[in-house]
Length: 259
Length: 255
Image (cartoon, rainbow over all chains, first blue to last red; front, side, top):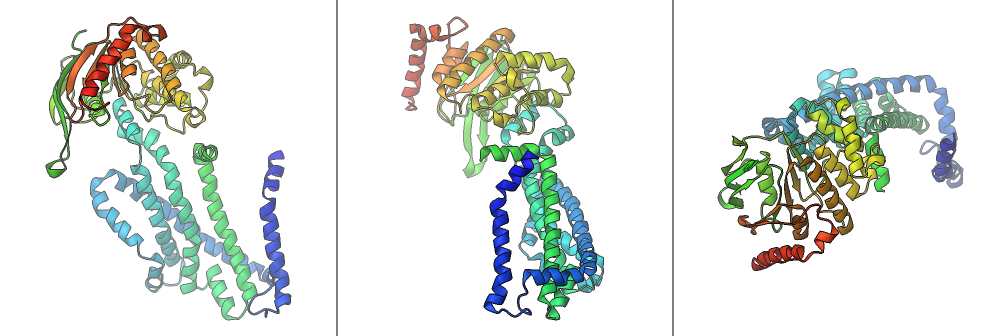
């Protein structure tokens, strides 16, 4: 409880800033006479948005499913390929440069193609989310598994331990902090991918909702959709950050002390 | 036992063609069981390379290393090894890091708990067993790493400038710790260093390596009684050894 109060107190400046920001927004609309079809006030967004709440919640579920499914698939594939490439010199000379060059292409450019190949359903969205999440995960995993210090490598060699045992006792834990850099970056990308995929072609989801209501000159509802999208993005990112805290608590505490 | 380790015409060349770098050798020497031998030389002379080849952790270009007449042709596992940058992992406590050595070797942790406590006590770390490495000072980390390298009672200990990054006072203290443990357990120690004083204080024998490509210039037997505490360090004989070694390196323009 004490911790909670301390936390609230340490966050008071941020809370104050947010409050100030929304107050400024609220009162600058009448003050500068901004038409509501350009920018609605926060109070109006809440009011109109809550009338559409059922739809918004349903669409959040749709987008969340695409995001989470795509993210999990990217996580499994990315880690798998990352480890395989780290431990195989053949893959390192073939797949790795291939991945690096594809990384340079904006993956989202493939989105219209996937929609035209696979239609309006769940699959093309999941594929696009996988595509935007896969590369940060795989590239960071390769980096992570290749950056074990020379000393630790020599140390485990001098113990005669098997490769499998070394992997689980040294290589994997040592790689996790750098892996999480990729996981977090991918978590940010995931909702972006899902939203853009829905912009391009879909009949449900928050991206679809935002593009439709914007077309109907309803920026208030668009902001309501953006609010739910932000909540979704924060939840995904928050979950990954929580997993980081649970899986590598030593890394977090190390950062804190080094500050 | 005489000639416990035999090193014959050992040589290392890195790279090939234009990129070729002659790092070490050829050099021939013998080390007796239970001996504390220092490999002393300027930085870049290939002394670490020599140590890794002895441990079988690095292939030699030519020549051979034998332990009790058995050829080394892969990583040796009956050794303890310690580097300038320690091999403590940040996700384990000091105790956990010492146990890491045992776990990787498939030894039973329960059988070693008392030994872990004893070795920690001998280097004054008993109160820090449950601390993480990043909570310790550099000197304490090196002492923990020393426990990690020693816990499985290796017959051979390889130390690659383990005190290189520490301040003068801490070095002094840890040298004394090393000496104490060596005198009790009598392992064979190969100690790579560029500190003349350190080499003279700790070793039975100092092997002087020339600048790159490292070759053996000469060996100096250090005939001083153990334990070599401050009194011994202040003796004229100690200073004489240090001076004579300094002269050799002065000749090479190293100092």
